[in-house]
Length: 273
Image 1: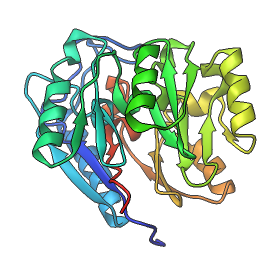
Image 2: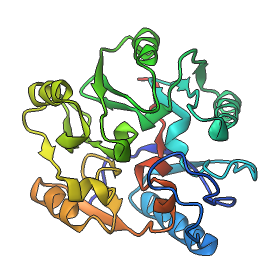
Image 3: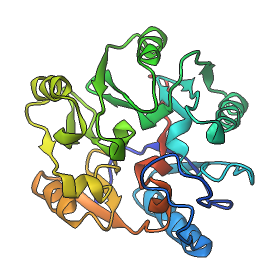
C-alpha cells in the first residue's frame, strides 16, 4: 500500500474485555463474548496500523475496567496537549486516571477537565477546528473548555439517536487538512446540527443508516487509507468511490461493547515543530 505521513496512536489491549453491564444500546450482558477472538481481532487491528507505517503506543489494561480497550475515550490530544476525560458513567470513571498517568509519564502536557466529556468519542479535529458532540455522554460545558485549552474554534453538534451515543459513531474525519473532509450520518444529528454540517462541509461523504449501524463511521483515516469495520461493506465502497483506500478489519467481538475501529484508537497529535 502507498505510504502516508506516519501518525501516532494509543491503544489498550482487551486483556480484560467483557460485557457485564449495559451503558449503551449495543451492550447485552447476556450475550457471550469470545475473549480469545476479541484479542485476536484487536491484535490484527494494531498490526494493520503498524503495516501502514504508523506508531502504536500501549496503555496498560486494568482488570477492573473492562471497557479500557476503547482508548479513544480517554482524552483529546492536539498540539502536544491532552485534554483528559471525565466519564459519564461510574463504571468507566477510573479510566480517566489511567489515561492521565500515561500522558504525564510520557511527557505530554495534561489539561484536567472540569466538565463531563469522553475524549475523542465526542471530539473530532478537522480543518483547524474541533467538532464536538453532545446529547448523551459529553456536556456542552466541555466544548468551552476545549476551545480555551486549544485556542481553536469548537462547533457543537447535538446527537439525537441513542444508538449513536458518541460523535465517533456518527461522524468520521477522512482528511483533517485544509477545510477538511468528513463523512457522517445525518439522522444521528438534530436538524440544526445537520444544517451546520451541510454549511461547513458541503463535500462531505454522506452515510446512511445501514452504514452507521454497521459502525462504518467508527473508522480511522490517515488521509489515504481508511481502516474500518469489515461488516461495513457499503461504507467501504463509498470510501473507495471518494478516492480513499478502504482497509477492512474484523471486530465482531469488540462491537458487542458498542465500539469498533475508532473507539479502540486515540490519535496522539504532537506539538508543531
